[in-house]
Image (tube, protein in one colour):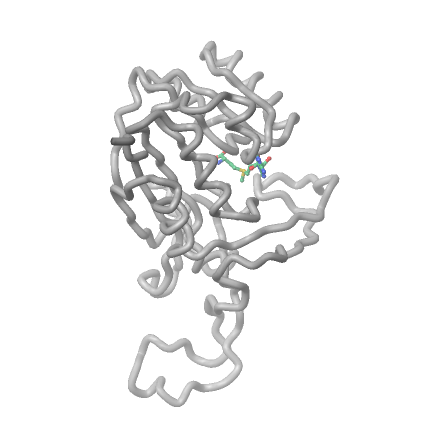
Length: 250
Ligand SMILES: C[S@@+](CC[C@H](N)C(=O)[O-])C[C@H]1O[C@@H](n2cnc3c(N)ncnc32)[C@H](O)[C@@H]1O
């Protein structure tokens, strides 16, 4: 995993939600702006930062309006991820926004769910696969496995979900259970970043993700705070880290 020294940098954390990573970036010495669409999330993030005695600027805004709201070419680093890109309809527009926020030479750091994970659902295998006698990898009938059931590539129409449970793990039913999501293929993400004028400096795929993304199929590792497939985790890219740098104009 790439390491970043953020001391003294102007950093914007896009889709910061409750601002826990925003706070960590500030504690590492960055001047940080946290941005999120949700006024409630920003209010909670402001409260957390005040109680921690940490100086963070918070802004309520759509990612796509952030260059207008924050100003162009203002940041040394755009940091985002951990459940961020799937809420945005256009990865091209997102990458253009990132480029607009960065100073020449400024960097992007994303760690987010892998699009293969986001295209997968846990399913129970119904029939014996004819190749299982040759390949012990193939899941036996009656056992659950991740299956590619949802779009991998970006689609114009979102997936609609109606789910009252909250990913924070709390018991309360959420007041607005309808949500929409878009997946973006890894090639689409990299190409969008390149087309926006950034140079890709790193791309790492990981077999783990910091939440239980496939309930019943993943095991939590308290040492890392990450979940990975319990059975044959080498089958699934669960998250990725992408780093890039805005090419200074000649
Ligand atoms: C899963 S949370 C991100 C969590 C965050 N990365 C963290 O580690 O705490 C997704 C966040 O994206 C925000 N969001 C969704 N669509 C957005 C948009 N178009 N512009 C800005 N924020 C958005 C939501 O309000 C939510 O706070």
